[in-house]
Length: 187
Image 1 (cartoon, helix red, strand yellow):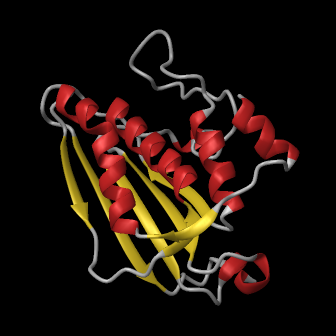
Image 2 (tube, one colour):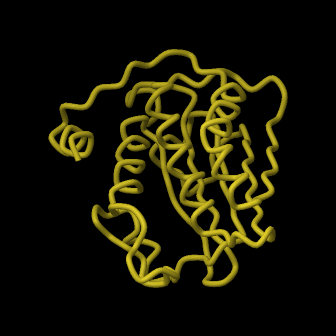
């Protein structure tokens, strides 16, 4: 709650340093490793060699990755059929990425084969306290703040966060972060 209040009031700051992306991903996977083992979920990681360092707040990006991975784990079945992939690309952004159309971007892609997210919920899942209606438990898991905080962190990095999903076919979250760290350079 306090993090979200700081983000919404504009008082949150980032401590940007050059972050080695592969190291960050490995640390995030280690942080959720027990959850993966408990649900017998297979994780596939695809990271290209020689990625440039990302100018970012390492702790905040770790928070983003752990939240997205944890959500994917929650969405997967615990019967051994759960699959999550974590991939990274580094390229010029697509034409639709106007906020930083001249900056090279790193895109983190977290995909699962879980229950998916209804199209009508996809724009709302980033709102605070929103709980998806297609959860398999009577009481929704979590507070409904994780994705709202995740979106705020990505916004502070001048990045984009979105999801593509269909119910019953899993969800894919995309985190696009520019390889520059100031708004003047990303416009």
